[in-house]
Length: 292
Image (tube, rainbow, N blue to C red):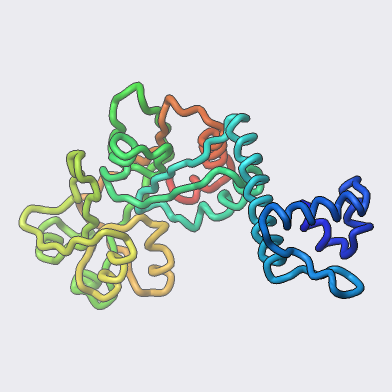
């Protein structure tokens, strides 16, 4: 604080005044620090004392330590008030991360001390993050939630899944609705389940239907747009490609069941950060834009 005050104010007199000390007392404290550390902090050869290279280094490092101490104090206050140090949020691959950006900015404007950790998963993998890997909240998970008092959950809505192909794909010009026999003759692009311990979810493949498996919707969309297969996409993911004409929607005779989606969280964690996110996600029209 002494070196910082001297650098900011430029003279012993004003620096001492800002610290409620006399110039002589301030000079003595710096000399004692130099003596104790066996270093020279100030070059006193000119009209006004200037920092030596060592003194400048001590000043910058000292400022870093002061900043770290203030951050630690703020974190301690936040933890004492009930804000978690970290919050792990797992997203199903169908949940658009971009939709969370305004909420992330809003959250950090109120509580910059909590570290947010996001991860992305598919099918049963989202539930596995909650039950096996310590996620605090999961968003957009599909299929029935696990039955346990350890977790609480809330229905978000249903994914509107539509069947799409590229305009050049053989099914693009086929008469609708497409039958299972027609679909089974063409390669399906499917999202693999990221779960390693839970029972994997069914990808709605027909018997003997050839397939290409991918880990994310971005890869699936690329394959679909290239005409290398067919498959279902959530409407909000397919929309920009439908509008550009890169994909076309086709009705099918045996419609895929809607995927009910959930938000779930650890019942034992009632921290302020988790609560903030649960409430923020349920307000406004974010979910209504994604689910029915």
